[in-house]
Length: 262
Image (cartoon, rainbow, N blue to C red):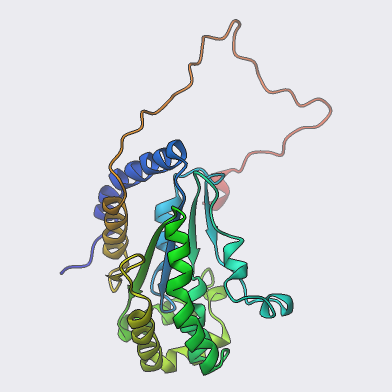
């Protein structure tokens, strides 16, 4: 299948983003709580997918959660505790850019969690997710799959792009040499946590644009197709001529002159 060009991708994405806005309106209207978990290897495309989903949504309703490594206090808590604090309230949508599944992935492969801790997690995760679903949360779990050759190309692109180099870390350098270990860890995770109440959906992301469209289409199709009319405010005519901004004793800085770039 040919790689999707940017112009075609944008054309296909726009109507889906309209549907996402309508979905968010339904969630707010029905007090629905939605959790979207995005997992995958480094460079798989989680960030770009989250941007495509949230680009036109209200940030007061839709939040992205990307937690740093746990603090000393959090390490002494129940493992799921810091994730519980991030769950949505009524009418909210939360996207996890990596989630509690860190324990079965990077923590396992890089030795940040013991075998016993990982085993306990794989037993507890289905029960934890059952509690969420039973309480009415819509839980959508996606794993973005990427071949190693594609991952290598993206690592190289980041390395040589000053605007993307910040994404790289020493862990990335070590993790890229453990591709097979991550595969085995993922397979064990899927076997233990792919359940009827919280199934995993795997999406191929060798072509990230096509992968985003596939994932968003699947997400929209699994949610109820309920139309909630859009309530637009009424703007009456102004009683006077439109006013001009007043600055008082301060003046704005000069506008950027594009001719300076020439």
